[in-house]
Image (cartoon, rainbow, N blue to C red; front, side, top):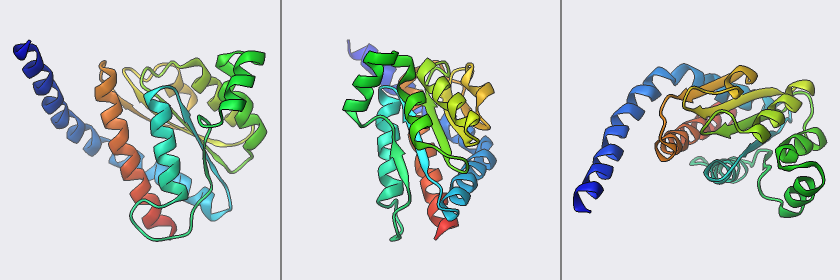
Length: 191
């Protein structure tokens, strides 16, 4: 038991090195994503962010830092986590299918000039894919944080960051750091 626990701790620590290397490689795309979102905010646009499970929690965390603040005292920007309204989620899931929960909200709330931000550790979450597809149809910019090989979502997004790891918790750790960097950059670029 103790040996297995030590191996897991070692895996987490080794991942920190991989995270640092990937962040250095993804600096340009992180900056481009922040510029895209900042540009939308400057034109009174909004950010719609969504994902499943831990990625839903990341969506909510990110939206909170955009509406509230990350570090810099500033006005709140328009950001909505499409994972929070249980009445909408359950009604759409029941009436149209779980795969439609983000698509339906993007079609109702999104408009040209807004940014749709999907998060998927597999890169293949059908509801995230359909949400981004709907956003493209509305003329929105699409961005994604993905894992593994990026899946089919990497081909859908205008800008995507893929952390090529197979272990979901390690991918989520990377995504969390990316979201903090993007929030920081948005603060610097928009205020």
